[in-house]
Amino acid sequence: MSNASYFTSLIVNAPVQTSARYFEAGTYLVEVDHCKFFLNRKRQMRAAVECTVLDSNNVTCPETTQLTWVVALDSDSGPSTLKTFMVNLMGCKPTDITDEVVNKIFIDEESDNTDASIATGLQCIVNAHEKPTQSGGTFTKVLWKRFDADKDTRPDFKAMPQVGAQPTVEVEETKAEVSDNIPF
Image 1 (cartoon, helix red, strand yellow):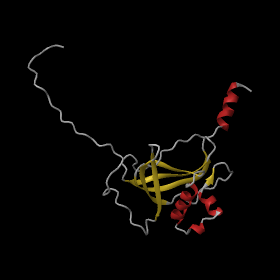
Image 2 (cartoon, helix red, strand yellow):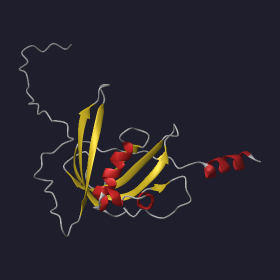
Image 3 (cartoon, rainbow, N blue to C red):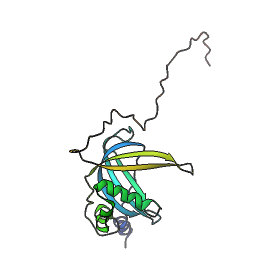
Image 4 (cartoon, rainbow, N blue to C red):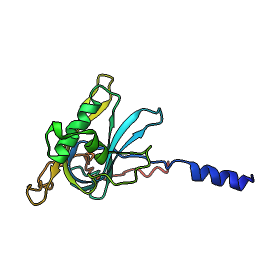
């Protein structure tokens, strides 16, 4: 096998790399692009909801920003957190979340299933707030509610306090009077 064929084969058989931007504190109107199950680099099961921001009060995440919410399914709260998301998304009772429903919402990246998630195209109001962790980091809690433009009132994002921006400090420029012209 020639070097070119070897490298071509490496590229063809390589997984597509993705990087994600995660939710920051704020309130968002988003459209769901995709829901999936995947294994992270450590081969731990995760669920991800990928979406596009339609509007928000977070100035660092304007319209068209793509954000991802990831849930660790091997954590104590992961499965419950994901079930709560599905109940809120589908507007159903917890008992309505069956294996079939889960597999229609979340597509397993490892499977041959090429169907789109039934959640694709749905709109949601997302409230994200940050809280400190015991280890000194920051955890972003994300709460979801399905948004129906025909039934629900769209939040007035312009009237909300803006988040995500660094405060700007205005500096007044002054010139000092120079009485001595020293060249150094």
